[in-house]
Length: 153
Image (cartoon, rainbow, N blue to C red; front, side, top):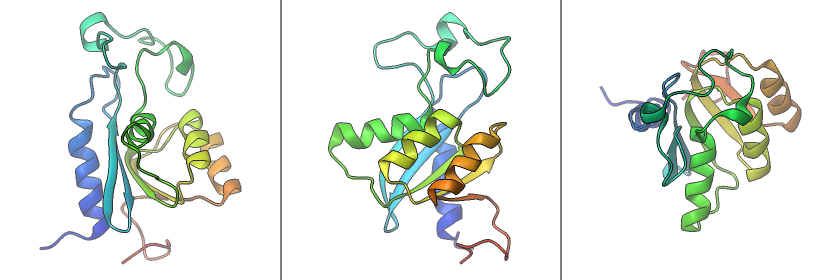
């Protein structure tokens, strides 16, 4: 059976997540516009920096959703935005497919980057991020979609 567009792009996000070097959570993100992939990202240390898999996690005993500033890694959504900028692609008006709900920091970046919709598989403990997306008018949908949600094909 042929996958829907949502299934197709989310499967790609799941594949991208397999490149993650984070010890806590493997996250993949895909930026899409007009059914075309613009950029992908996964969470891990910046280029040229040793990965957490090599040196350990600085946030090992810290609850999810807190103390992002001490993490060695860059989030998948951030890496997707950076990749688009690095290669000169405008992502304004695009859709993000992510294996996880974006955190508050990524949410602020996605809003300012002009992302118009977000689809994610796994929830993340950050209700403030969801509230901010709603206030900004960015559609944010937990997959699989139900008949009541916009964006159902």
